[in-house]
Image (cartoon, rainbow, N blue to C red; front, side):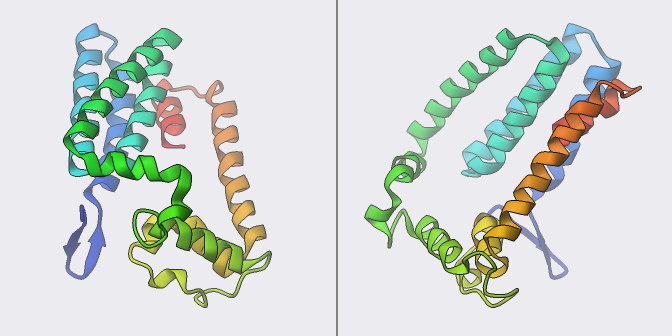
Amino acid sequence: KNWLTIAGFSLQPSELIKVAFIYVGATSINRMFRSKSILLFIAFSAICVGGLALMGDFGSALIFFATFLVIAFMRSGSIATVLLAVASAAMAGTLVLSIKPHVAQRFATWGHVWEDVSGAGFQQTRALSAAASGGLFGQGAGCGWLKNIFAANTDMVFGMLCEELGLIVALCAMLAIIALAIFTVKNAAQGRSSYYVIAGCATV
């Protein structure tokens, strides 16, 4: 679902659009400060996020929206702008959930996945069990069983990392990502070009 296979290689179009989305936003802010250009970027963002939501790819839709919030805040510097965007997204999300009730069921199951381990909570419970079975040092690369679950390499990456390489490596990976984000934000103020500053922060 939402994947394309070309010459034996599989990819998600949304992954390519994410990169384009970031640089389109950075360009519109760096070079075009007219209100018209900002409205065009908002429209472009709404099309991207709305299209993904209607396809059922809510994970990518949330990533796009978070990226939009970063770019919008760096453009306006106003918390009110961000809150307005969040409120608009909440209303749009409510509309999408009414159209796709099965997505609402997933959200409802999130807090009590162990009550339906063979149904709505299947992936979550398997990921938690696999992560616990890995212990501190893991079972070894490629030796886990979670990889046999459908879409484990895309939807349950942290669970696979814990199972095969252990909790220590998984936590180090998380800390590395957090450190990269902090480094990017701290150095943003020293950037000579707002284009690269915005693109860097949004990418992280």
